[in-house]
Length: 119
Image (cartoon, rainbow, N blue to C red):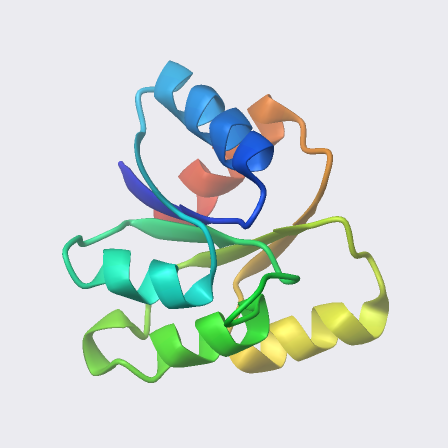
């Protein structure tokens, strides 16, 4: 499996990479939505993980930009965030998010969620 993880926190990117590496999942990292779109140009991920609150382009804008690409419309996108408000979940779903995981994340649950959406 091949995953793109977008988060402005270096610590969080490192935690995601270690978790996914241990599960045998190839991980590509980006530090915000703009960088995420740049990285996405060169890869074919099976799933995407994104934070919501990021500089330059937030998670909502990033999800919408990915969904607007005709060949990327079906890639599962998991939101990984400290936010848990129902209205934010609704906005993320409306933008095209597949699922929602609250930080701090349980490594096993993150891997299981990816396996479930990206099989």
